[in-house]
Image (cartoon, rainbow, N blue to C red; front, side, top):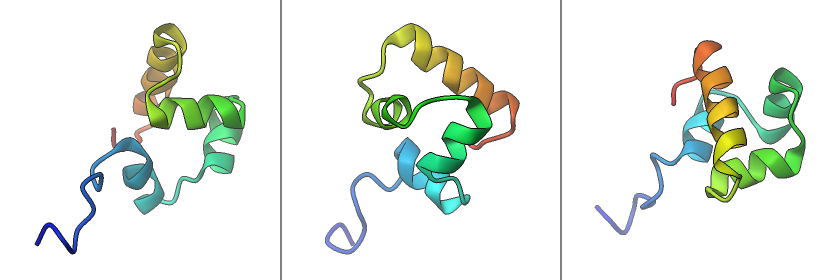
Amino acid sequence: METVLSQCIDDIEPQLTRHGYDIRALCTQFDAKPPEIRQLMRGTLNPQRSTELVEEMRAAGLPL
């Protein structure tokens, strides 16, 4: 089973992609720049901005 499924299937990027949100859509909806969204997905965005974006996404009903 592990050879078939990705280890990161439940990470933030795959979850959002399955629900139809790509980087461009997230940037438009949450007034963010593409590098910010990429850093958020990699876990390298500064904690304050990361918390702000995640709270906005949860308030909008995204499955995080």
